[in-house]
Length: 500
Image 1: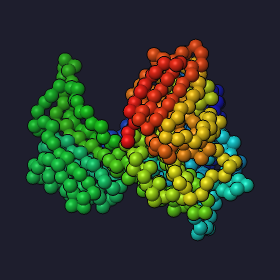
Image 2: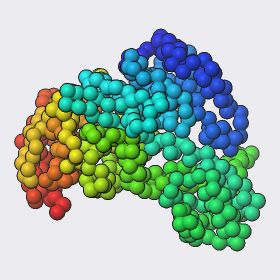
Image 3: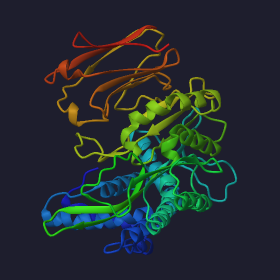
Image 4: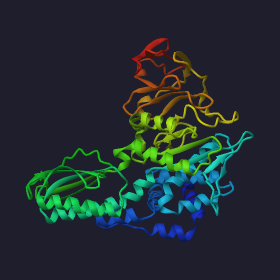
């Protein structure tokens, strides 16, 4: 998608036209400037998610035009990415259904993702037909790809919908607990790990449970009576004890709420006292595999059981920035589920999301790196006209328990700045065999190998010492039951013993 400073307003107007003046006006009215943080958090939690994108984009257009250069944050880039998806699917029959679903707060992120997935298939040259759910009692997937040999059904879901729908409950809970801690003169840190998606009743249960701990002055680790939440409570400071800034807390929580009294003295020195922290680890974080498998089940309910099918699941936005870590944590459980209980699904595309601040030629401003987890024995085979090998990939043969594959890497000079980028991706026709080379988020390169014979194996290496940035470099990946090796320009780059 090409855009310039001169056409940002034109894009904004066309984007507004998709939804109508009434809907857009209501979203742009959600202003939070000058309000207290707890009020802002509640407004943002209750508002339609598109509201924040619209307001941010409008403000950043003004700043960009005044400075003569792009000043666009993630929310503006998300909106531009959605705009391009809507432009691509607009000519399709039933595209209005997607617009109407985008207006529904609870389905917004899944519908954004659905439009993005549809656009991806269109960009790869496939015809798609958007499902028509109007008045139908039959299963209706998001869309399907027609062929002379039958249909391929596609269902897409974003886990960000769950994060968005739960945020109001977590915000309400944190406000109530922070007030309770202040009234009780407790400088505490309360950590909540969820084993289910929170609702209003859970919120009340947690407030009652934790308030009891506060009243008794009890710290430690606890499981609620319903066994749905783990509570960890620890003291931070004695009440009214003064400390100099900065306040340090190395929390890795998905959501963090902190309050403290902060001030500066006459010399400019900053001080604080009475901090309290509420940190939250929702189900999406505490058990990613469970969340993914549950959504595979939900997605499959929408797919007719008579044809091959794919499910696309998008990770929550914050965790989607590290797809590799999620895949490493979840692969075995999700792979086992697909291959034992859901064999009629041909496979799962697990997607991340990240804004692309330094796009290469032809790349999008928002990237959706994905990892495909196949069913090794699906009930229905893919049509011969469909190939998992898309235009920016190559088709590879089926492989045995040992073998090798050779390919060439084009001159490339910015490896260190391209974390998460897929450098090479090869599929067999049906996707059951994959070889992927990608720049990891820890600064090394990983080769992933997946096949029915060896399941998933991978090897990591640093190829900056081996790659030639001035010409093509031959890369060989070899494997046997004992080890996996990588050769670059004829030299060994890495060797790794395989798991049994």
